[in-house]
Length: 185
Image (cartoon, rainbow, N blue to C red; front, side, top):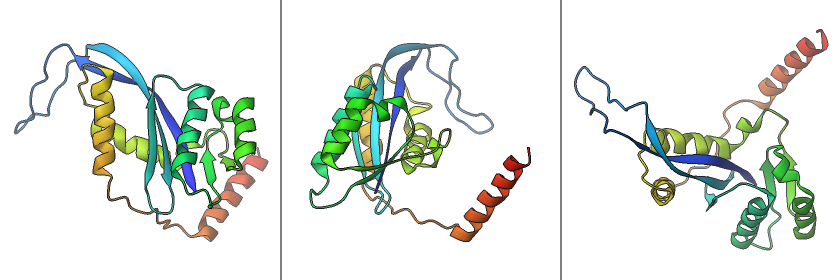
């Protein structure tokens, strides 16, 4: 079971002036202006069983790149296992060429409801990447941006499995209450 998604148009930003360092009584600072040095798209599929990540970097995020990433997933997963893939409802994921490829390769694909893509574990992985490596990073070119991605992956070499702490009955009860509110509008 893999949760797959892409983080598109990540900008390689370089600040025009160095910021002031962190010191007692003052936060570190960054200038508001920057130079944009290109963009990259990061694709990731995270295993819900053990937390491992399959990834790929590319310039764009069209259906062609998504197909290439699905090929990467197919290449590194055992052929004797059924592969279940959770993805959001992005049009690229449902493109006719993608659907044709998925049918031929026999992936089982499940799409999250619209506006709930944050419920996949790949989104949590991208959040951590943004907070820990990208948000305050300085990148002189796209290669430095990709290197930050690789360093983040290396730091994740000890993956942790997903452990759900909520009870299924509690979640279903919340869904029932939400449905009741929606039905009464």
